[in-house]
Image (cartoon, rainbow, N blue to C red; front, side, top):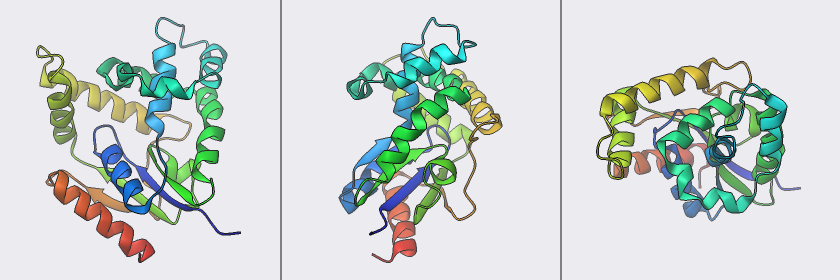
Length: 210
């Protein structure tokens, strides 16, 4: 049986991995999954819930409706904060893992972006990218995006959010954010979007040759 062609794109918040994953998926005619949206959806559903009730939050994860992923509310700052919090719950990660693994291994393959795609969800992926940038750069990008809808949002607030999320994502016991040993590093700190896209395409081609 032909091995699925999987491109795993990992990295911290606001590194640009989602944009690059979508473009690479279009390049290769592959379906794309932003796995962060799954956790944002769980966080959205868990607003006001007791996050110490891991079984209860995991039950919300098991009932995720694919239609919920299109909700614009999932793109906001609060959804991102909630996503990072529920992603630290092992029962939630377990509840969402089978969906992600099945998506990655569908016939032909797929592109997935997240925090643990190359290390946990698809460690067998032939192409793995780890996209990152300095926290200040990522915070400015996210601030420019969010301040269009919230003019009073301070850059310093977003920078603090980024640092807190980085610490939580990298420090959790279950599937922490980390670069897979065989992942190709792409630091976008000094790259604009066009240069980042060109670099990502070059890295993929260097690994797969097509």
